[in-house]
Image (cartoon, rainbow, N blue to C red):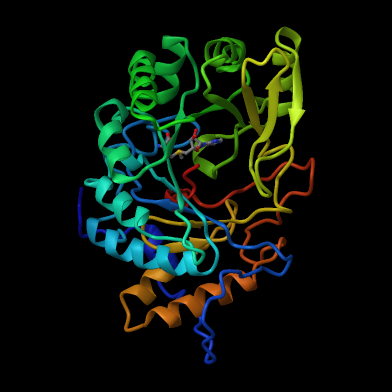
Length: 374
Ligand code: SAM
C-alpha cells in the first residue's frame, strides 16, 4: 500500500469540522433529534479492511490490490474511540456495536473492548457491547473477546451450501470454518448469537430454508437482510432484492410463524417466532420498508466521522475535534448539536430517504463504506 496517497474519503470531508455551540451545557443522558428520537445506539467501525470480498459489499473488482485503504494514522486510536464513547454514553447511548470492514482484523481489539466494558451508563448500569463479524477469526478469538467483556456477537453467513458461500464471500472461504466460529462463540458464552444472511434473489435465496432448518432449535437468531444498494460498486438491481415478506412466506409454508413484538423501540429486525417453539427469526427490510421513524442509531466511521443515517453521504468530523485542542464538554456539545439537528429528510442525503415501500437509490459513495458496518 502506498501510504503517501490520501484516501478520497479524507479529501471529501476534510473541511467539515463540527460546530461547537458557545453555550456549553452538560449532557443529561438524553438528547433528542428533531423528531424526538433519542441517541441510544452507536456503531463503531474499527477498520475499513476486510478479509472477505463479498460481491454485495466489497467486490474484488473494486477492492483489489490497488485499492488504497486508510493509513494507520487516519484510524481513531482506542483511546480516541473510548473518549468519544464516554461522551456518547453521557448523551444516553446504551449499546455499542463494533463493526468494519472486518472488526476482528483490528489488532488488539480486545483492548478496546475492555476499555468500553469499563464504561457505565449515567445510572451506573453496564453497556451492551456486541460485534458483527464474518467469523473467519472467531474460533481463535472467541475466548479472549469474552474475557475482555464482549457480551454477544452477530455472525454474517449467507449460505450453508459451500459452493454458494465460497462464491459470495469472494475469497473461497469454506462454510465449515464459519460454523466452527459460531460453535466457539457458543462455547465461551458469546450468546445468544445472531446470524445475518443477506438475501440476493437468484444467488442465495434457495438457501433461506436450509438456513432456517439448520438454526432452528439452536437458540441462534437468524436474520434475513434485504440486499441493499451501497453505491455504484455493487451493481445493485431491484430485481435481485427478495422482499422480506417473501422470506417470511417461504419459511411460514414449512414452519408456521407468528409475529412477535420488538425487544426495544428502534430494533432494526422485525421478529417472528416458530409456532412450534423452535426459536425465532428476524427480517431486516432496509429496502422495502426503511425503518427511519424510530431510528436511534448513529455510526462512527473508522476515521472518526459521525454519520446519522446509513444513507448519509457525509459525516461530521469528530476526529478533527479529538485531535484539535478541544475539551470533552466542547465535543459533547458538538455531538449534541449534531444530533439535535437530525431530521428524517436529512439535508446531507444525496437523495431523500425512501418513504415506506419506496426503494432507496444512490446510497453513499463507496469511499464512505467503512461506516456502514451492520
Ligand atoms: N465484516 C463484518 C461482517 O461480515 O459481519 C462486519 C461488516 S459487514 C459490512 C456488516 C453487515 O452488513 C453484514 O452482515 C453484511 O452482510 C451486511 N451488508 C453489507 N453489505 C450489504 C448490502 N449490500 N446489503 C445488505 N447488507 C449488507
